[in-house]
Amino acid sequence: MTPWSWYDSVELGGGLLHNALPHWLGILQRVLGGELQAAVGETRTIRERAPFVPDIHDFRLRGALRPTPEEAEQLEWRACDSDSGFTALLRIGTRDDERPAQVSISATGHPAVWPPHRWRFQEAFDTIRAGAGWTTIPT
Image (cartoon, rainbow, N blue to C red):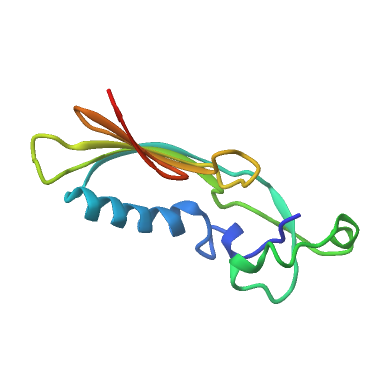
């Protein structure tokens, strides 16, 4: 059971949209050579509450500090209101102004769902999928 951290709170800046998406947009804009032109999507909150384990600030340590179910019963539980998954469809400019890229991102936020994160780029001639590796598939 993954413990609660600031990452589970919108007020404290948590969630994938606040943390992962800005980095991914920066990468996409740099690789494609243009700016974000349009976006649509939805977010998901995977869990509603989680046990609080004191002294976790670095959310990457949550996995190493998971309480057992018996330990979790003895802990304080806190609400989780941040998005822990999202799907977005983006239109991003490219170096060719006449041919923007369409990028779909699926970030599950849950390691039990495979694949946990996937990007898919669509352009007039090719689709590139990014996940475990890069593959170009002619359309």
